Length: 259
Image (cartoon, rainbow, N blue to C red; front, side):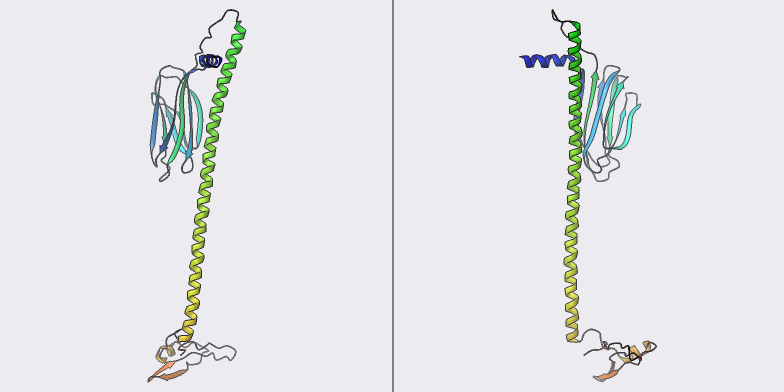
């Protein structure tokens, strides 16, 4: 009974409010607007949003009044918390845009609340002084404000946790992809080296490093300082075996036409 009475008493002092809390997935290049109606002039409008996941965790936002006047507007923001006075009655629009992203989806958590600040009167009891009622009233309003602060802090830390988790997951994915690519490159290079070494040894045994060329092909391309190619006859045709440098200290190995 005491708990129910305390809750009922607290509800008297909490300002009358209309709140909407949603989580929306904003697709690439999408603009989405949400609307709330204000029936009383000079009401306080609280607007909070945070990008929970996707891309660089940023969106464009714009708040427009009933007459089309822009109240709040900014680009590439990760989160925001605003309170403004709705001087006009009518429909207010809250728009989020993901035009900067071509492929990334954004998960946006937001809350819109209209608060009417008229305070309810406590039922007076016999023997209760006005000073006592005033102090109780202030304590309850202070408690209400602290609860709102705790709620916003929880949303803020949840947003930070989601961002940090997304960063860790992205880093882990990049490390894994880099490791796979590095392993594939190492295997490819190893196979290529084995193939080249086997090709050299097999070619040396079979004499297939270079084809035998006729002297008519090699003679026009003699370089200065080189002796003419050594010519041998094989099967009725003369073939060049190699070049030898004129200098005795330098010699070009006769690799052309090894048999």
